[in-house]
Every structure is written in C-alpha cells, then in structure tokens.
Image (cartoon, rainbow, N blue to C red; front, side):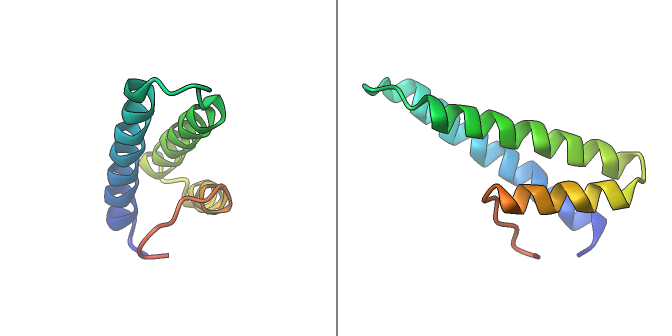
Length: 79
C-alpha cells in the first residue's frame, strides 16, 4: 500500500471516528457508552501516532502502528 494512500485513508478514518464520537455524545443515551468513547479516542490517538511516523519517514514504526490499529478493529481498504 502506498504511503500517500495510507495517509489519506487514515485521515478519512479519523474524520469518520470523530463523526461517530460526536453522534454518541449528542445522543446522550443512558447508560452513557464510555467504553465506545474511550475506544474512539484511543483510535484517534493511534492514528495520530501513525501519521507522525509516516511524516518522519519511520515507515517501520508506522507499519507496526497500522497493525495495532487493525488489531483494535480499524479496517483499512487497501489492507
């Protein structure tokens, strides 16, 4: 998978996660799904880490972080 495609897809996934997170918070359901909110925040943090590794040309660490993201359930199209 090309680095440019990975960066683009990570950005799209980050936007999707943020939208879902905002919907969860806006729905104000009871009991409040703290586990889903925490997972969303964790995925966003991991995406940011991966993007930093890509920007610093540390592709080995970026690949490891991508694998961690996939293990957390994030599905990338180009996989």
